[in-house]
Length: 57
Image (cartoon, rainbow, N blue to C red; front, side, top):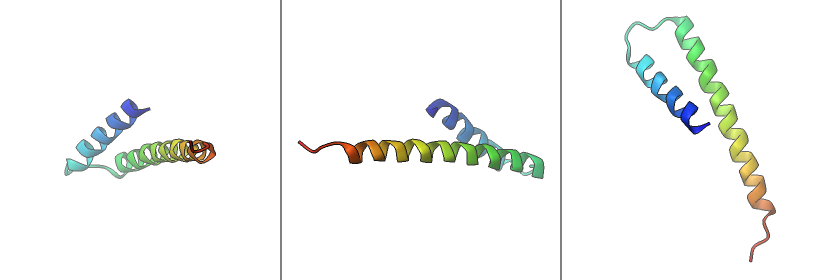
């Protein structure tokens, strides 16, 4: 997942640096970023739950 996310962020930066971006391109980018953010939040929540269940030494 990190490689995919890094590529998406690079694509987003390049697209947003352009002056001529269509609404369709921005919509596509927003959907992909939203999907990636949802994945990142899910992983972070899962890891947080696992850490909370650990018994301290």
